[in-house]
Image (tube, rainbow, N blue to C red; front, side, top):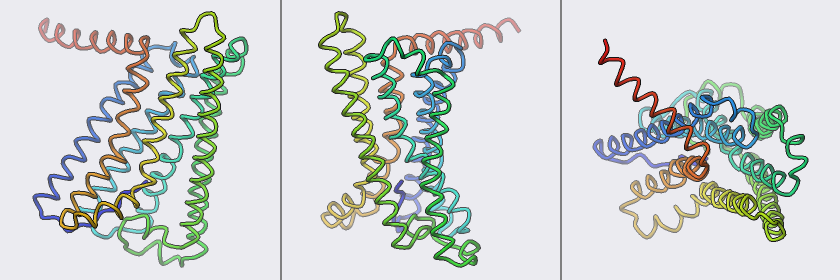
Length: 307
């Protein structure tokens, strides 16, 4: 994840940027929190692998938002921080960032099995296996970050972890080995995810053409296509250095405003689209959410009046 900025703002501008960032993060997490509450309000969702994977994506995005906003605010609140604290925050941010595309690949595979292998779906996509798959995703994400930490222990002295540094990825993981490992792992992971999404999309598309009842197959194809859109949004973070290189020289006096807009556009806003893309499209989930929160609001209004 990329949170690099240059802190040369005036006090008013810095305060405004931090308020906007925190407010956006809060609003997005409130929306995502409503989806999480809706999921746990109905036990049928917890028995469906599709909803389990979906709510895991939402919770992962909530964690990523919290870490991303915390790192952004921290760079303004404290120019230098303890290296160990910064390393933990950056590591958690990297793990959650890597899990998002892998989770989307898992959701695409689940839809592929539901459409192309309907008779085996209930045996393959059980809640227990879905939970194991989620643990596997966290294992992959953690392995990537553990390699970075091992490289850090090999290349840096123990005094580094007690030192004060600027909390940017380039300062926490400064060596060429870190850069090479990050590039290689991102290329491998994203290539694997894109192959899965493209393969499942075309298999579902062919199944939709042959199906007598095309409704569910077409809906699954649209869902997988939206997975691709979400992957493109995830990959925006990979091109932020290129965006800085191209845009900032054109408007050098607006450097801090440009970096702030890029940060919001590539790190914050994509986390809002996950609930809109998946939750709002699912009529069953939307119906449950409306019923649950309408009931809660009604109770809150009626109970005080009786008291």
